[in-house]
View 1: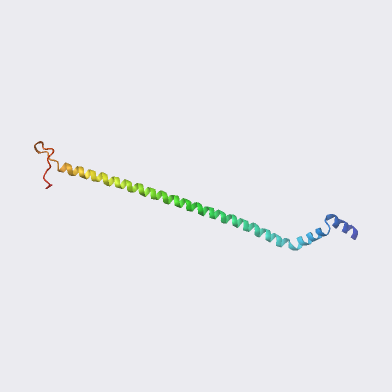
View 2: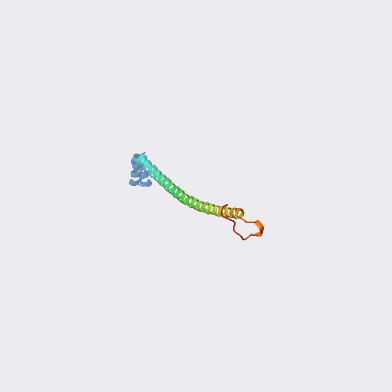
Length: 116
């Protein structure tokens, strides 16, 4: 093959720029591949960090919601305990009045002596 034919083929393929590209590809393709892999890895790590941050935020929101529910539960339990105490006080007062009731000779309105 003659030199003129080779030059014609190189010129048809892009000339000097094609030669530069081929030389650069041969010398730097490993470095370029590592750079591309590093950029992909950094994007993946960034996505993971964003996902972890989102999950941590969701956990914080759920913890706050659970804390609110526990506060509400304790409040309801305290109200029920107060009602139980009130009911027991009324029952105790009723039992005391039954013990102190005077049924002798039809004197339902008379107060019995306090020695009971």
